[in-house]
Each structure stands twice: as C-alpha cells, then as structure tokens.
Length: 308
Image (cartoon, rainbow, N blue to C red; front, side):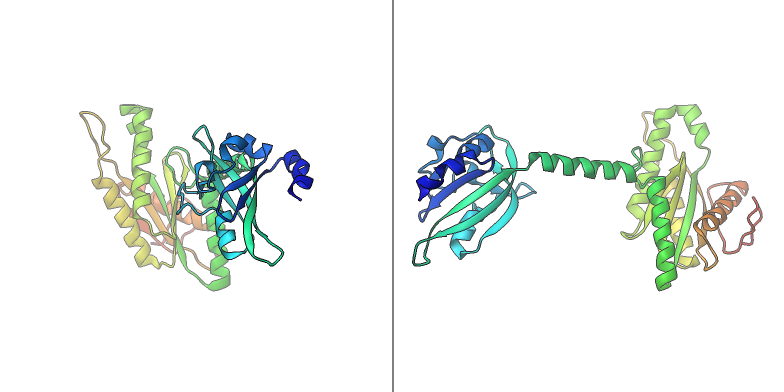
C-alpha cells in the first residue's frame, strides 16, 4: 500500500515522514528534505528522537525529546501543534505539525505519520504585526504609552465608570524648565531626561495603571480605583522620586523636577473636561513655583481659575 501512495507523498509541499514501532524513520519525502536540509538517506533508519526531530516550543525549549508524533504513538491520540524543527544548518524552522498513529488490522499501534508545513512566512508576518501594533501604541523615545494609546485607555476608564461605577483619576505632569535643559545641555541630554523621568514613572505604577507621554515633556497618568487622597499620594511620590533621581551625565549630573495637576473623574466629565481640569491644575502648580502638585475637583474651564 505504501508504494501506491508514494507518488502523492513526493508531490506534497508538506514534509511527510513515517516511523515504525521502534521510532525508526521508515519514509522521508522530498518536502521533508527541503524544509529540514536532511536527506532521506540521512534520516531513514534513524530514531525520530535524533537530529531535526527535536521539537522546540515557541520559547526555544526542547522539552524531553518527545515530538508530537512520539506522544501520539504513546497515547493513540492524533494531535497538531506549532513547534520548531532543527534545520541541518543549525537554525530552527517554525512548522505546523499534524501527527497520526498507524494501526494494524487489529487496531494495535505499529507506528505513526507526521506531516509538517513550513510556516516561516506566517511567523514573520505575525512578528511584523506585533511590531506594528507595538509601534502604534508605544512612544519610541520613552517606552511609555503614546498619546493615541493613552487616549484610548482614558475612554475605557470612562466606560468602566459608567457601567460599573469604578472610580479613576488622572495626573497631568510636566517636566519643569525643560527648555532650559535642552538649551543648556543639548537635545541628547534632553532625551535622556525624558527617558529617565519616564522610567521612574513606569517603575512606580501599579500593574493596572498607565502613564503615557502626552507630547513634548508632558505626561498623563491614569489610575483606577483611587480617591483624591490616594491620587495625591501617588502624585507626590512621583514628584519626590523625580526630584531625588539625578540625571547621570559625565562630570555634571543634575536633578529635575516635575509639576502636577491631579483630579478625579466625575459623572459629569468627558475626557476633554477631565484633561482640561487636570491641565489647569498643572498650570496652577507652575504658577505657584513649580515642583509641586495641585489637586482639585471643581474647576471653571478658564486658565488659572480653580477651586482647589
């Protein structure tokens, strides 16, 4: 029967191999040679645990040398999986594997067959998509969420508040006298300052909160399940940590400070009114000497006019 199907197996684009009850390779088609670099002469008679038939998961772990086909022969269950095979030249090839047991007329397992497809193009496309998604959400300089992602998270928080009554607050933050830093030390140090401040924010937030770069030297933090007191404490921690963390440059490390506006979303707020209020509270912090936090609930939407 094997010879009746040999022409079909050789015409397939999928790799195909058979093993017997002793896990020895008995057939290896041309596509298997092409995908793995190993010829039929090299593989027939070899244990399926040798050479390319070490299967790796997506983390690069080889497991205990049990391929999907070996597992199928042990339990009689057909299976499929995305794994990596070891190529003759040393690299790993991502493949989609389908393993099926072979039985005799009495139903006893006497071997197995595995088909495997090269999915390198698919994996490359998935990696590219993930990279594009990351670029669309992450600020390339600081590694924080970018403005688009931050705006999207703010919309989500408003939906949660409307549906579940979950409170949240925002911090509008700005690096003090950032133009002076750029003018004095240059834009490379300015970029270093942005990255350093952003790293401090990222290290200080809870897993379900977010801080994003709003633009320039401005940042917006969104914090779930907070009241004004907790939000103020979070903001004060940001302010103190920023002030106490020097920007390390040769011969002349220096410190920077931030000013903050803090407010809690109300039932009457929209994303625009909430951010406007936080921004105007930030303006008050700047106006009153910088390196401080101003917190408030009610605010007329005119610059510098606040009830704090």
